[in-house]
Length: 81
Image 1 (cartoon, rainbow, N blue to C red):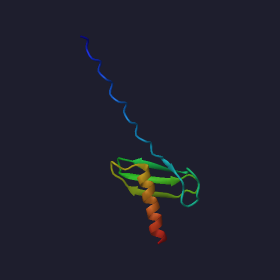
Image 2: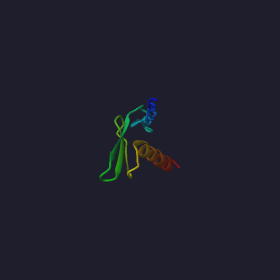
Image 3: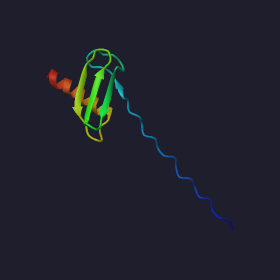
Image 4: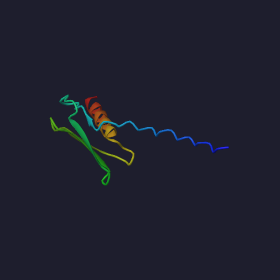
């Protein structure tokens, strides 16, 4: 009798990539806001290349650019209320 063939493991699932550029809430320009994550100083900075609006927030090791953007949107909402 022959040896059974071993089955191949299933292919690894790829993580979905999150956007790193966003829409500006002040000038409404599409994809003009980019986030910079400075892990050493634990600061996330986000700035618009069209109108120059910027925002800084503290980050941790699990933070992503979308987290900095959502903190910025939340801060804008708090200012408007």
